[in-house]
Image 1 (tube, rainbow, N blue to C red):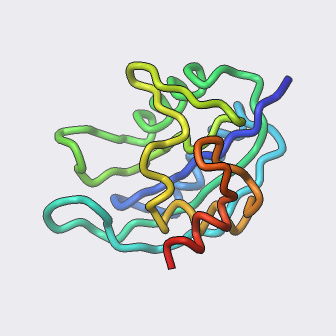
Image 2: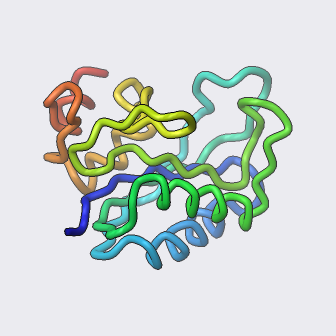
Length: 152
């Protein structure tokens, strides 16, 4: 059975719009019935030092692959987009975060779903609410729209 997934995309280096498009295109090979948000320009949040503005988006769809397989593919897509990780919080060409994987709660080395900080991140919740406001967080039971309203 396909699983509904939510993925956050972000970029603050290079041609941000093209890089998000690259991420969407590659993810469409793994995620069917893809719905994508518009792009949202935001300040860097929780990162030290000067950072260029981010372009953020979200997508929701269905996948038949496991959460681990999807995460591995997402890391390869980031790498193919030129992402380097010289230090935590470094600017990035493409950042892909697995926000939700169905109603599953996963806590394994290198894989935590739901994403542990998505509830506090307007730059994730706003694009996600645009396309899937009724999607539920399996930890809190709240919808994406309800989580977004808690931030205001």
